[in-house]
Image (cartoon, rainbow, N blue to C red; front, side, top):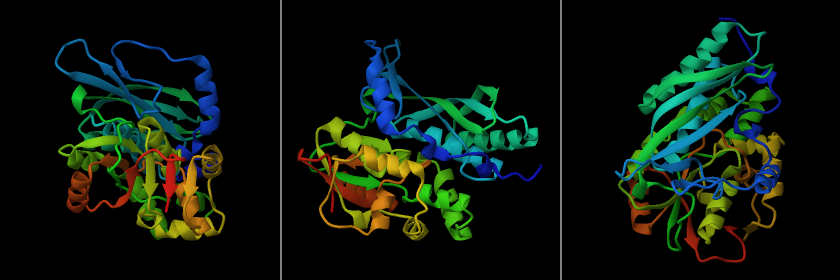
Length: 341
């Protein structure tokens, strides 16, 4: 297979390539929502997947999501793995098990087909790890390579998680470190260390399957995964949908150490600034943070971890069992959806 630099073929990469949230909401709010009595979760709550009630009367619902993006790593196989893990995550974030996936491919004619083969094999490896199957897909010719999946999963309706339902007294748990977007920007600039790259790749290729399975026995009140809109962006959605305030302890939030250094060098993705602009007025910092730590809270993540809101007792047990840190708590609705201490 020819040696390729996939990251040199794109302007933005991974979930940082998402449309700015302000523009996206502006468009979606202008077209109105479609409704069905069997549509349990749709557009309105900015949830990770739609939830549709199946007409077979056994409490089973179907979860569907779609996610694709340009590469954030040069290796085609790793790119396929990251994109698949990212798409599968939406099903885990809703409390479901992925079962069927469809490939979505945009591929440049200037690249050898061996590159496409490696991308698809990488995606297939993660779908296989999840226990789902790839049953088809769609391809188009495009100057910018992109890959992802449409994923279908299932869950009992009374066990579906959503980004609403968080309750005062809950604790908040984050299952992956932040900083992937900043590290990927440093990689593209040729300034990231091998260690930092390895940490980011390991994070992005790790399925949220284990985090989901460990939480199935707990009383999860709300859940989401942290992707392009950053920890603060997705936490804001949870707080607003739940009509509560999330209090985040900045020092408890896990980060990729090298990302702090790269942020101090100004190696921040464009999506970070879009997230900060969109969240103006939604976040109150109760103390002054180091600028690079504040930047990481707005950093767009690719295949990020789960943010779980659960009772204090269950949260403490879950954290002890898994090692995932408690990063904050839920309080009564205050002036701001998010408080950072």
